[in-house]
Length: 322
Image (cartoon, rainbow, N blue to C red; front, side, top):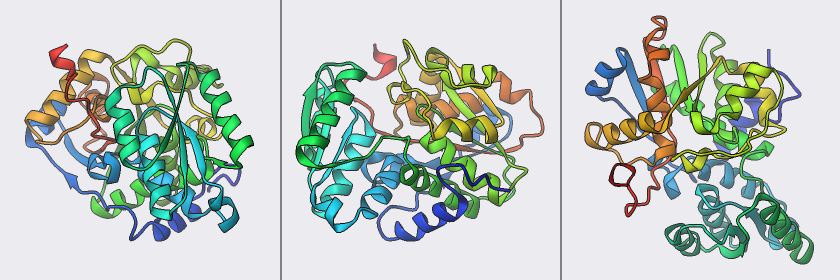
């Protein structure tokens, strides 16, 4: 039975799917016999790197922006992000014809700034600290009346991301598990709510960089442990779980698998070379987990979906060239 206290429900995720039907891509699922051999089981890659803006984030951002009232929308939206949410919210706002202010740290790569600008976002630079980001966003909310859209800890964001699971369960039969990366937990919690409601026996496994292991620590402690000093090439997974995402991860996620940067790099390269898909380091984390000894030791998991969360890689800084 669903927990009515979660920020999203199966019903809100299904409503999001209807809302987004002609807005987002239904992304393909691909297979790769080489990676099946490495993982010693059948893997099904849900390619959110083929989503608009190159990441699953467009689902949640579009769902949130589409549900703003006319009055709210007129004032525009604001967020703080240097990654895929920044691009997703910029494009979602552009599609609705409203302004979007994107607070980005001053050390954000130029390639990311360029992408946000190309999607129509108005960039506001700040010092590279969480406090500075939050203060800058709050100032825009006060001065402009803009609606703040959190990158992950938001009911509409979670519901939008959960549509990944609805598609996946229609595309692939008899899955034993879904492995998804975890940073702030918007994608993971949306998938967990939808998948567990539709198929209670399915295993939901979080894949997390060992250099940013707050979800693993939180599960071990049974309480939310905040991220302190993350250090990983998976730059999209540096944030802590949130007030809305942690309860779902606590209750519905069966396990957290940690992978180090070498494993992430190996998985990323294998996806490029053997599966022929471009993924960013964060997008390869679930594949790294699927190929890990921890997953290999569980013979009950023979048909496993792997969420490839994004493909916005900096081509000038490929990890195997650094």
